[in-house]
Length: 116
Image 1 (tube, rainbow, N blue to C red):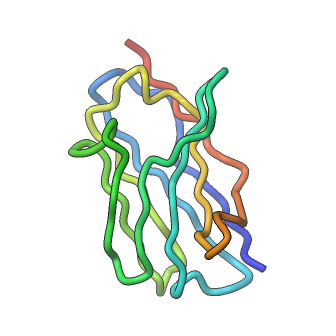
Image 2 (cartoon, one colour; image 1 turned 180 degrees about the vertical axis):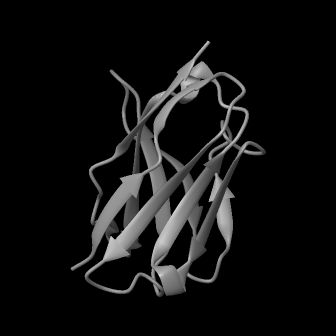
């Protein structure tokens, strides 16, 4: 079983940056794709970025050019660098492990609040 713990959220002004971390324990994540998601109040959870086990990336259109997902398998960590933040990026951010049947091992989330 994999346990994921997110951190790095906080309150930031529009235009600012944050770097989220997702640390895995219990089992190696090196062979798994990993994803970052977010859920804003009253909205459905949406995928923000995904990174393959080998480092390939893809992003939601809303964050392309502003967010960067990366990983270090030796450290069992996945990061989400968020630049040029906008108020609409305000949400709880989660990381999860990708499996054939979908994502699992959700963390508890970290709150990101962007003030205008």
